Length: 91
Image 1 (cartoon, helix red, strand yellow):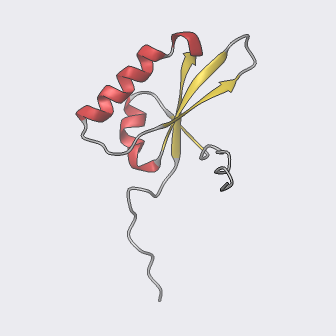
Image 2: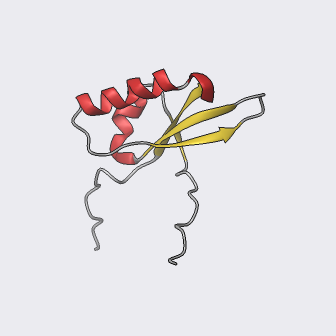
Image 3: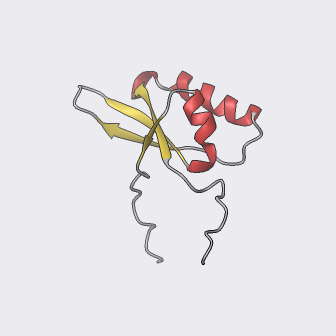
């Protein structure tokens, strides 16, 4: 009978938080980053500006599975991993 390897901090769902309108999201992002520093984390969320159905774009923070506890503490919801653009081609 095969056994699965034990889970690692990188297993599990990603989480996301909508930090709000891009023009006003800096304070919320600063609060999240301060919480990461206070927790001694070396991981960081991926942030991305996304267009919503509203008038303004929003700043979205995506948290990898290793930051799931912190993300949930700040109201994040589970999501699929963010799609990232491919790296630039070498010159």
